[in-house]
Image (cartoon, rainbow, N blue to C red):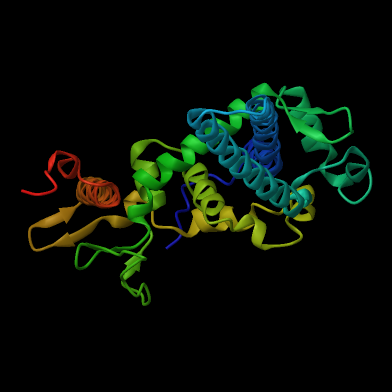
Length: 297
């Protein structure tokens, strides 16, 4: 059923979501770059420690133990650095060179200019577009929104309105017409932009990047057409109203009940996950009572 009262996706929102998408892509490499810089510093410090501990011909047992420990730390740090450098090479495609923006990605220039004007993007010394401090803050806020989306909206992706049940992608076969996606209706009731919720859902599932031509579609202004269609076709609050033997039940009453049930279920699921993590941690750690036990009693 089409929610005709929902407005089409505005040009301003398309621009904002496009900027967030580019920022998310650029940060894939940027985060690795910062991790590499931190590891470079750690490796440098450990190398100095090892060199200092190697000095002299005669070492005490304690000095030998310190040297062995620092060598192991250095080996692990170098291995981590090697892995990060490998990931950087694999994510090289996430970078955007100034020259590329003038050729293959020419259509992205207005969006890149918009990001520069907002202070979230700059051009580095090696002519690559790079998030600024403000850009990294915007990205962190995006990450927080993604986490909040998973906590508060994911539970409403599959709802059986007849049975009053919530589907679980990990355990249920989510096929058939009994499942309704109520994330747009929940967002509408909570006063949250439904387009933002669907954008976060698609970004969380990496749906935008499935199309190898996503940057071209973004430059053409068509990348978010599917997102707009999804929002327009989802059930809204007024669609949930129905009539029974006792009279008319409003969509507002229905969505309040669904949100109440969904919130309790999501809270129980988070508590179960927390308990599982805590139990796994306990099982992985030796019991402190072992230290107290006598060898012979």
